[in-house]
Length: 460
Image 1 (cartoon, rainbow, N blue to C red):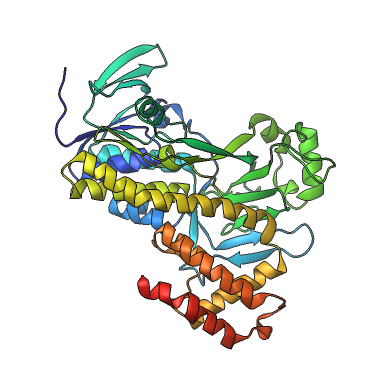
Image 2 (image 1 turned 90 degrees about the vertical axis):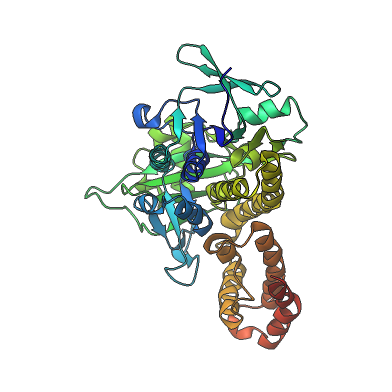
């Protein structure tokens, strides 16, 4: 049997995380082979999973810089300054993510990004093997069986170590679970999603403000729209899988036909409807998909296997951090592989570092769904947001808005969650019963910050 070199590693999955990790490791001198069950998207066209647009933030851009990949990725990204909120009644309003255009996020298309990273990985020396589906793993012999689904042929592959970057339905995670208890648990959200599209205007321009994430909050359901560089918007309707009684409680089980979808949009998203000329076609063509959080207690099998990204910690998409978290995984893994001669030690160190942060962002992603669909149009939420920005100016480096920690900084997710919970308490206490910042008791708020938040800043 063919032997493997000491600096070789095999990746299962050539999606975003797999392609980026392949590039990072190849640049650091590793021999990298990547096995992907689908065909080469540069030939067959992109055949990825869910196509919700991705929001690229600072903690995702940092690993791209390490991989010398930021410039080609940013060339296809569209800036989003904040949430453009479309209430059912009232004026459309922009809620900025940060203080100015230095604090923004970027909309990127999953398929285009994947192809860009695949090209860069190959340029760095990584070898791509498409149409190779992981079927089973013999961890004792350190061989894997791969199937080409085009003809059913089986291929045996020896490996030194396997890295599972093969997404939420990870075949490697399944194989690991057959020989060790990984503590896998999947928590399905009682909401699903369906994708629609806003095409360019007749003159080729965007049909609405391009530099924003548009959101139509409707309590228990919502629409969002993210811009693409070809002047389209990817629209996603999030709604309960099972509706309640009456038209005011829609669900994917009650809104089934294109005609019912049009009636829903006419009633609840009237300003979005004219922008989606192929609503009925998109509704028929794109199935409703599920949303879930993957909890995993064990991410690695000694020195032989490890899962990263969605294969280890899939999350719901409502904080826009799934890709950013996976890219952080790639940078962290590359670093621990440099720091540890033994792969088992490296994998254990990676898991110890990343697991608490993954759990924190999984929780924050769920919390952000409730905020987006229920809260962004509420007066008390808007007042708390105003106060948050004011306190950031009054207490620089001490009071840091939640969104800034998550999206504009590389503060560990676990630290961001802890600080955000403390800060939320300060905001709630300060604004309770208030209608404007003019009514705020600033002395009390400053004392609250000094008592509860300053010690955390000092500890950092």
